[in-house]
Image 1 (spheres, rainbow, N blue to C red):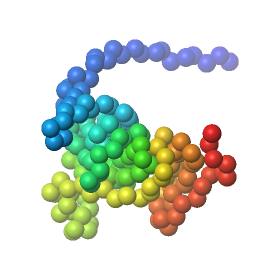
Image 2 (image 1 turned 90 degrees about the horizontal axis):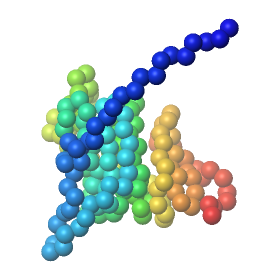
Image 3 (image 1 turned 60 degrees about the vertical axis):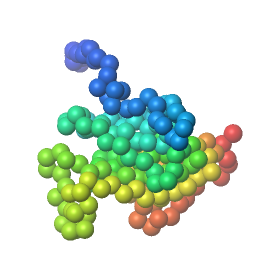
Image 4 (image 1 turned 90 degrees about the vertical axis):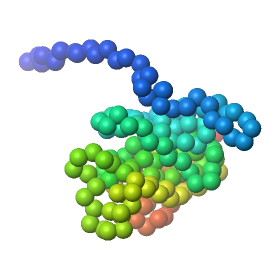
Length: 179
């Protein structure tokens, strides 16, 4: 019996000017003006995450039409990969050109979120504070990140690693370096 294919619906999307206009094209560092390049992108139903050449992560909330900025403390290195993770909390994993990986726990103002029990975390969320923590540092550029079942996959230009978040241990996939 032949199955009937469901009809294809085409949708026209306009350019995301509201998103691009919220990201600066240049930043001032001392007396120099530095051009901001957009280097990484990931999306889901709630957010659009954009990495930049100045180490700044721009996170756009689709429901609230708000842009937030996150950065590495004291670092100004290019973001090469961004991955939005939705599990119990909304997280963003960021990889940089120098091989650093950071995971940001997002402060969500969407309805039904942020019903934490821990008072310390509750206060931080109310204040809108998002603290990053360095979980892994690699000598080469990050090209892929993925997270599933408490394991973070990190692929660099040289190798692929599995970072077990509960044990805070690392296991290399394979033995040969990439060419």
